[in-house]
Amino acid sequence: MEKSAIEKIKNIFLSIFSGLDRQLGLILLGLAGIGFIIFLSASQNTPVRFEDELRNLTLSFVVMWIVSRIPPKWLEMAAVWIYGIGVALLIAV
Image 1 (cartoon, one colour):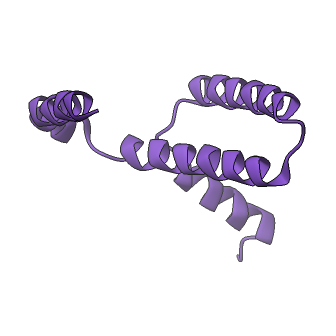
Image 2 (image 1 turned 180 degrees about the horizontal axis):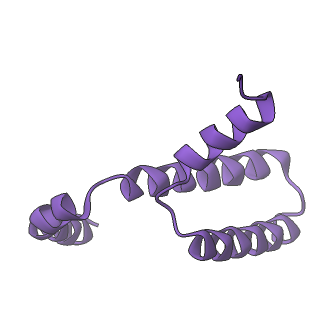
């Protein structure tokens, strides 16, 4: 029996977001949405700034999704190096 298109889309969506915490994701989306609305009201609806902020918001969620796919064991092994790189970048600024 062949799956319907809706079932296929649902399975793809679930496979993409399977490792993410639903409540945390909703909280992050809510906070990002509130911040985006505040940004729009403060920037007086400038189209260029709107596009830049939307790009940055999308990029941040993509990076968050990529990092969520890294196994925790790898992050534990690389923690000292990540910390060192972060401190070096702070000193560089």
